[in-house]
Length: 242
Image 1 (cartoon, rainbow, N blue to C red):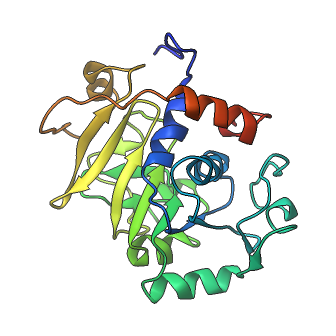
Image 2 (image 1 turned 45 degrees about the vertical axis):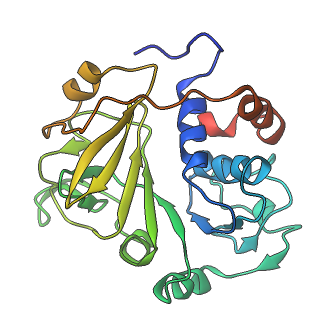
Image 3 (image 1 turned 135 degrees about the vertical axis):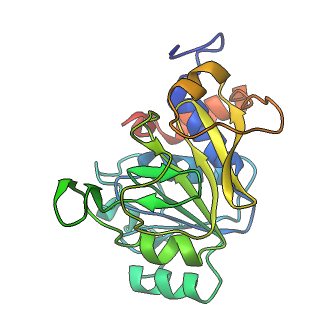
């Protein structure tokens, strides 16, 4: 898979910009732990097309002043200090269950064509090959947020499977952004929404276990010069590529 194209945009840049463009001005948006890419995408959206987006996170800081020095977990005190307000994680869950959380950025380990998410086990639940972290917040937020956006930095047949080994959660999946493409959950199943310019339809099909269905072949727009300049300013330490 090619890692860059003519304007020097990398896969991580393409993914971050794709995530950013999914956000609308004025939305309440949450990201979890180990979520540098969504964190940067939120900051990018606020700096470009969505200045009134409300950034919510694990430490409880609302609209942190800067994400430049965020710790490796994207859940450190840097996202709390200097924030405009405080909203503890328990209140984020309450916000979502009351229908007031517009977007939740979450992830998982396995995804199937029916929109099920597995973050619990690989193999049989009682005798698993691998025991995973579990649902945590995603079991609450995916079913209750208005739009759940999944991001995953790995795209292969072990990740995008015909049927997950265990259903940790299901619900309002909207988009899944991977290093190869964007999937959309539509009419009860995952469909190919767009292919990144650094990939191809053949590569997406080769790395997806379920049948790749699409209405038309579309390509994810390249990052604009404005977006790339904003990324350098917002994320000088390239947290989005972690």
